[in-house]
Image (cartoon, rainbow, N blue to C red):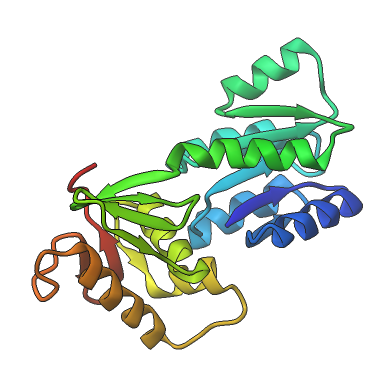
Length: 223
């Protein structure tokens, strides 16, 4: 899920439509105040944030970025703003941002920067397998290759982004399926499949852990 905080409706709508066309789910807000309040309350699973700086309300984008870091939110943040002076860029990076794009901007460049930032987590190790999110495949040490469909690789991505922490079922559903919720049993079926692939003994999982009353966790082993 990508966080988008932008007060200009036309810009916000255009970015959201293009991100959704790329397969991302988008959590959007028209100002930093509402974004900070909702994130503090619901703690959504966010992969990357796109923030304007100049917005109405008490908080601006710099304040929001600082608050996100104080909340423990470590996802990459890209500032998208008309402020292009050096001191503005330095202030953005000081607040905790990872990238800075000035308006006017090209959507193709913004999307490329998003993929570049997310690409840092393009691969992860699970047991005997190297999981590649870009190709939606996992290759074992012996050369066996397993392929995943879009929903499976998205769910693996959600678990990997929160590795070492339990992820609630509703968080997985929202991040992977959005408004088109399947049943909770769908998540269970995916976990069963992942265990058959990645676990030495699927009946005694050490990678895909069930946290009763919470959800599922991808263990830190092999990180």
